[in-house]
Length: 71
Length: 392
Image (cartoon, rainbow over all chains, first blue to last red; front, side, top):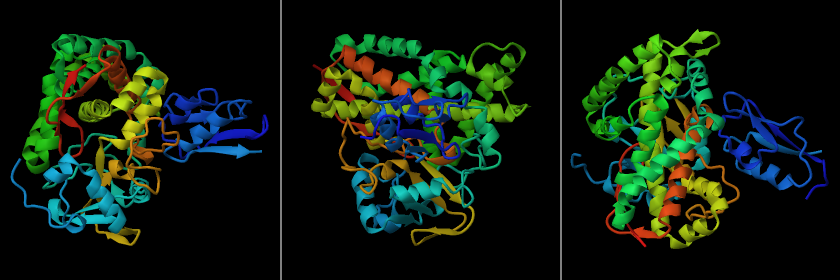
């Protein structure tokens, strides 16, 4: 597991089709716009303890739109 | 349904109306995926069938070569029955879709949850004491019609009418197109009154929303509104009814999974996704409009492509233990709601209905098993049409 604060999530807005998997699995990290398409909350920094949820969101996105970036 | 010639070789002569496919398509797809993997048939005036996840995905992502102007494989191509945005290609697709998205977000769907739970319980009340039921007829099929009617602001009792049209368009209409066309006409007629009424006097239902909705300052044309309403009825009912039925079918024949869900209700969202993967109800189609090739297979214009999300969901190259139902599966990029720009607009509604239907049934009737012959639908949407279960 990475050190606190070293992970960021990012939603590729061109790829996202609004399946809502990331928001369902990690509501702390993602939010939806009025059309139901996702974006990362704030600058996408993953707080300590939510690393697993970040990877879960990534591995359940049918459009491969969620990235987890190790900074 | 008329008697059809027996399939000679599934790779070169497949037929999705064949009883073998209707009753258990999974071994057929598994076999094709290993040896073919893109099958073709001369039936239905020529149809391709990719069975691997990556090929299904490639077709879904390529509206330039694979058009949505026909999304159902039929014996003969019907006069066009537009139901935007599912039958739209870029650039018309985007505005027709964007206007439909806001009323189907997860938050919007949450408002329907109390009514959905009440509907489930009203249905269970009718058969709980009897000790058995047909879970497809008395439960699964009733939930989506009532929820959709509620959402549209139409009488929940009109469900029989909706199911008649769906049966005519999606099942009978595969081989007798005139039946599908007639049903579509009846639907248009049915919606005309409520649409006009809400143009004068809007309420807070979905028809009112559609009549007055704007995207980029542009209101929908009346034809567009009627087309979208037809789509919501056709796409929003037997799909979810089939999904609910398949979930109950699995839980009836897999006591270990059922008991685990009763004991660990927090597993429900993950389990529902897995059941959606394993028993994805919907197979879409595309029409080839420009010649192209994928994985060595050349797609000829004018022919159809069956877009089997259910087959893609069983691809072992994409899913570990693809042929097993693993209700706590962690990684699950399933394609039950499609891939790319045509992702099911109602996916959040479907998830709500599936979750509510399974949760309420398990709360009231935690023990049940199969009690007779299961009959499956045929065609575009797969699910049990008869599902006799006994309780206890």
